[in-house]
Amino acid sequence: MKRFLLPLGLFIGLLVFLGIGLRLNPREIPSPFIGKQAPAFKLAQLHEPGKTISPQDLQGQVWILNVWASWCVSCRAEHPVLIDFARKNVVPVIGLNYKDGRNDGIKWLREFGDPYTLSAFDNDGRVGIDYGVYGVPETFVVDKNGVIRMKYTGPLTPEAINQKLMPLIKELKSA
Image (cartoon, rainbow, N blue to C red; front, side, top):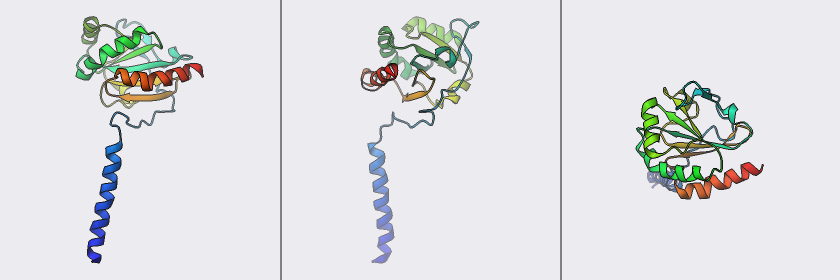
């Protein structure tokens, strides 16, 4: 009888971990950057290579960093949602064109519309790596002090914007 207790205990333990794992939302991947200063960068703008953008340029305002690429299929699904959100002009939406060709990114935005206040060009992906990006699209909400308050993995949906981003943005803007 005792020899069955250890395997039974291990089996029950595995069931508990499986049950916990099934309740997790795969879009809510914990990020070590939440509550921390957004990593600094200075990148050339996608449309104007002679001009740069950095988080310091956005100090004092709540803003969104949306990581995208012309080769990203999920970005295409997210794009109409971003266009609709950008039309509301709630906060600046900064694009981070990730591991893409400059001409490919510009052509893609010309074809599908440009929801971004401006896009930074992260050709080699180093800034994306600094932000912990492992796939596109990913979206970060940054507060007035340059602190990352949310990371959303995967394509934004109207529900995600209305239920998660907008309440947080309103809270951050009033703080």
